[in-house]
Length: 379
Image (cartoon, rainbow, N blue to C red; front, side, top):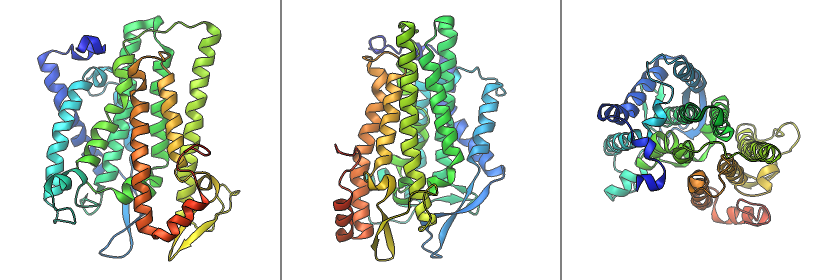
């Protein structure tokens, strides 16, 4: 079965190495917790309101510093681990990370007061508390998990690229190298705009349950590189020079196109929430529907589709599928399938939350004004 899937190279660790691989996530989680706690950070207010004070919650951000230190430590092999360790141990790390996520969830959920969700499994899955923090809010659990997951996504992608290059040398697939570069750029961009995350779906709507904990620590950090599980074992597809240029440049352009839509939409929403009357990029004047004390943005990118940022993520995921050059290989498409499935569900859930937040009548008015959900003219 493993050979049929083409991932037998991920099961070549010795028993001792497999055990270390299983516990690698736990060590990573602990080290990141200490590093984030000890390193300096900037305090900023977020969008979520603290019910005890009626004021926006404060968050301490130092993701970029943590990310850069982690990259340097990995690049210089300061831990003694080889560059390809994270990739070679990824199957065992996913198993270990899942077990530890289950344990963390039990602690995070059942130490909190019982909320609206009475069934224990649903409470465990979705969580009870919207926010959990430690050490006088120096560590916010959600932002901590995003830094861990994002940094490990980059390190896992880079680790896989090293494994691939050492395996094939001059016959290495340039698409695998670009794949690692894509995700490293993607995470660095996230760290640059870390504060924008405070105004997004997860921070506003999600509670701290298994869905979020496992999603951030394991899915985001390790399983987002699922395409590489299969594709790192494939050499350069050896297209003609002309087709190679078209393939690599085209996939890279598609990645940048998707990223620009997603980042642009999120930045416009962030700008509107912080400065409601400011023009986005100094060009796009905000237009909105007044819903009591709230406003629904319906101009610029948010006047084209209600979740245009999800379309950007979809194009970005499509570029990931194409960058390997093996267009019919299932592994290449795993990330794309996951992202499309995730955002199809999320746009439905987000619409439900928004109808509750703004009122059914005002949300219906917005839907009438902005007719398309994700893809303008299509859906």
